[in-house]
Image 1 (spheres, rainbow, N blue to C red):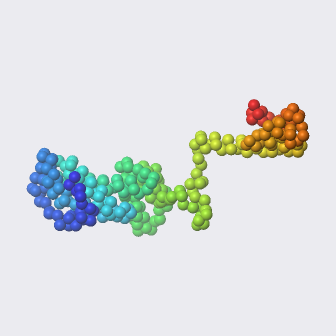
Image 2 (cartoon, rainbow, N blue to C red):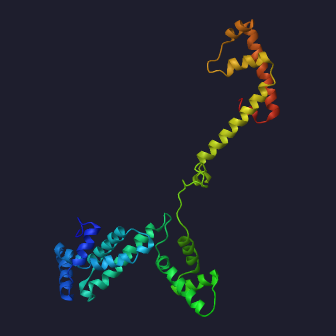
Image 3 (cartoon, one colour):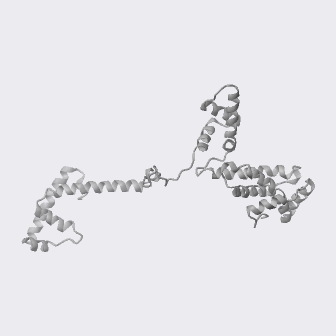
Length: 292
């Protein structure tokens, strides 16, 4: 492309020194590019009107975009204009290019105004760039008549003036009044405060199922603790050693420690399970689901 290899600062300096094209030279360069794809002609045409592109970019600084980015977008708009310009229509290239430059800059500003897309329809774009100006004028005119407009009246007048639906005015008013905030910002000035993202509901099925599972586990744990309390000390010892250890002990080893036969330990274990089952069934009729 004709602008490759130049920084924004270089483009600004070159634009101030660029030649001023008369109508005849401009037409000749436009034909050379359209008919012969003469890149030298394209380069001269674009360089000559970079002053115009930079001047238009400066008008949009108030929207907060970096000037370098605005110049780059205006340059892209200028190149699009040169590529689509039809010299047979009898219009000066500068008149045609203004619309492409403006459209390119406006699209960039709207894309980067907020993380939430502002909108790109013609009515939304018209509101974005004219709403504050129209509002200020309407308020001045009302004040000169000794009147004060409330917000409802003002929105209706803006919609009529700009020629857009009322709901577009209401939507754009909210967008222009708000700011983007990080979800990782804390909800208080305290560094230990909870982040806003922690307050968002996780609506995924996986998260919901996990919460339900954890709740069921907690309920079952409480049931088992209560059921264990219904056993005597020896029965609790047998259940704990047989079922609650990572390396469960054998009936024989427990019999040796308690001075009982292997069969007797098995009977005590079965009796303990019977007591626990009865206790659990009194706590919930659904307990059989966990012992199935």
